[in-house]
Image 1 (cartoon, one colour):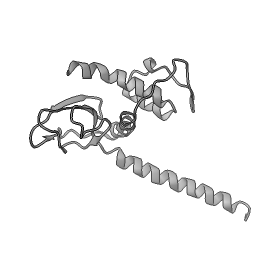
Image 2: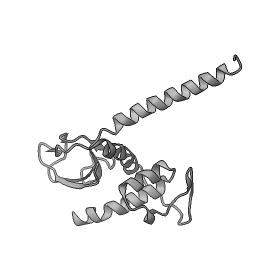
Image 3: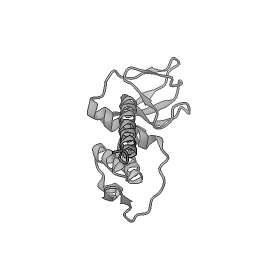
Image 4: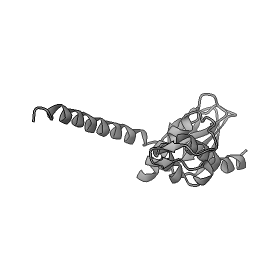
Length: 163
């Protein structure tokens, strides 16, 4: 029994760490909107906001946000900033948003066209990832570069239409 005690302590510490990280991820997942693009340098790609928040968007600038549902919203700045729509995300959308926020906040790097190994096997090509849920699954499965490329491709038509 004494020989197994250190293993039990390590297992307990790991379990506690998982619980703490899950609680932190749940708190981070509370955002309803994330910045996709902004002409205001104070708003960074990947920055998150809750529904109804007042965004300090300078007059004459534009911010493009993605709602947790995948909808794209473009707002034009005014002297006092702008208020976000009061449209809250559902729990599954909020969980997906936490992953998408992380992907948008990082700087994507170019990847080779050959398949990449992931925890869950071989990473799919970015072109094969066609939904927001698939983007989140690819990222969580160990394919962050493919997920980032796929997310950019999914967002491109909505962003181009709003230019």
